[in-house]
Figure 1 (cartoon, helix red, strand yellow):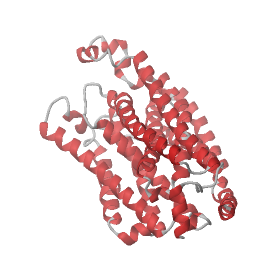
Figure 2 (cartoon, one colour):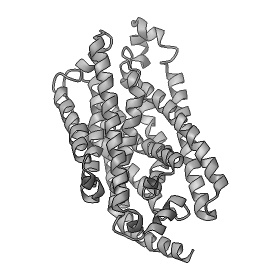
Figure 3 (cartoon, helix red, strand yellow):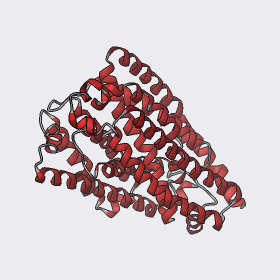
Figure 4 (tube, rainbow, N blue to C red):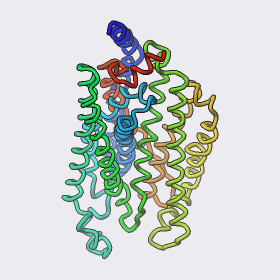
Length: 399
């Protein structure tokens, strides 16, 4: 126990030095960008709501993806979770904050979604048939339910981890966490599927895809894993993280990143091949809007930086074991994840004509700055290693 206390105290000092120095800059940049976003909402409301939706989905993906990975780690008990459990909990703890970031979308509902405009619905038979589902009260009720489930799940996961810190490992609690995590994984898959349909797919209510929710889900998990690798690499040279952030653990994280890249590519290719080969008039236009007018350039960039380049680099075992090289791929994918969401969402408002305006930059920085501040605040509250976690204990014994 004395050795554990030494490690805990030792790392708290390192956490102050490495992490807390970014809190104020993140909050300052986020506050300034949010101020610019508010000004943009007054001057260019249409562009503001469109940009806010993309930024919101991006940063929400980091929170929910982290919660999903945390659930997976609880189920599998893999040693790969030793270094990233605390960052996962810190990111999952930002879910309630993201509920506040949803408010502008509620305000801009008629601007974003044509099914929320009574004059459009009155002249569209298909929208009238879907009105039982696509209507404002039911939409808001579902959104409230999603955030309630996500907030409750993330809070309970963090609560169990805190109890383990204070009371030590308990087989009874571990069994409870495992069972709850299985249920949590099912809840995550179901809620993110419907949330993706509500917030993304219903932007084009005449179009549909059966795996739209799965693409969103794997994108969130991939986004979160890139951040976890970057945080681990930033702290890997300080005790006691250096005892568990070994080349073997980076190799594990690299393999997971590689797997998520593969699944993302498989889902996207599957959707494209099925829709393109079917050649149905109600489905193909969704892709036509994204492969013309300059959008095809962004699509090619995504194929290169979101799949082909990471796929080739992550094939190397030595590449995955080196934190300096692995973190570069993670950073590249973190940028690619925003471009991917931008390619999925923005062509709805600018079909066949590529566009990017300053509102996308300030909304991304505004939500992102505040989110990073909240994430780093959560992260700095506790040591980065859960010392009573059996996985961490095994790693420390091996060191």
